[in-house]
Amino acid sequence: MWRGKVYLIVFAVCLLLSPWLLYKNWYSILNSVAPFTTLDNKVAVDGVDIADYSERAEIDEIYIVDTLTGAIRQLTADSFQDSYPNISSQDRRIYFLSNRLVTDDRPHDSANKSLFYYDLSDQTIRLGNPLIDKILADSSGQITQLMIKDNLIAIAECFDGSNLMKLGDLGSNQLLGTYSVANNSLIVNIQDGRILVRENGQVRALTEK
Image (cartoon, rainbow, N blue to C red; front, side, top):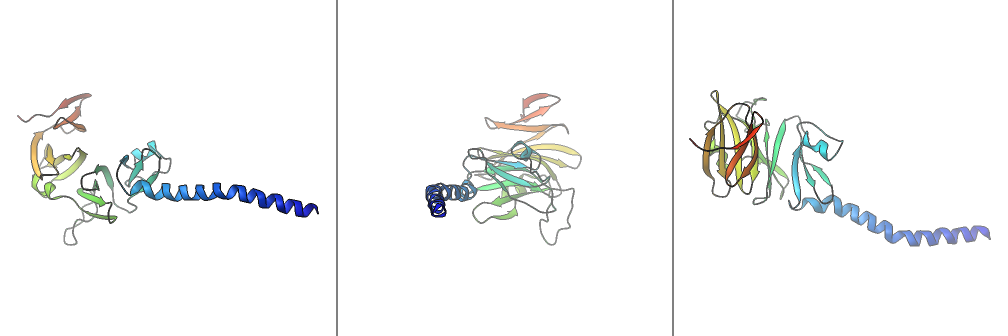
């Protein structure tokens, strides 16, 4: 008889736990998928910055993180060097620099990076943006830094021994400014339509001379 009571107790516990288990599984599935259907409340990070969100980090890969739930999604997993991921909310893309192959007929240069983007709508990686072809000094110029904010894109380019920074508008595909900078200049922000850089510990806004 005591076995029958045990079975009843186990059955009652299962009934009580069932709604919680169903909710937990549903929430886990929703939490793993829903955060990445839009780019709202998301930040894009590379294999270095991901360490701020997770101990599981792979150098030269890019991720997006949901700042509300903490959910993480790895976007690239290959032998290429991917860095400087930036979200463009307007066209639902995550732009980044990579040394992956540009075209089949162009020799692969592991040291030279081009602009690519991850399209959230179809989850594919494609080559850059028409604006980049317009604002680069030459197709052989090397992009070394990238930042996107409020539909403006700032890049640092090394070309023929010169270090340039350029500001463009992703909406109109127009070049807004070109600036000569020191080789240790780092892009830190885009504010009030200008590129802010850090040089020798000081932050300044770039102005055309």
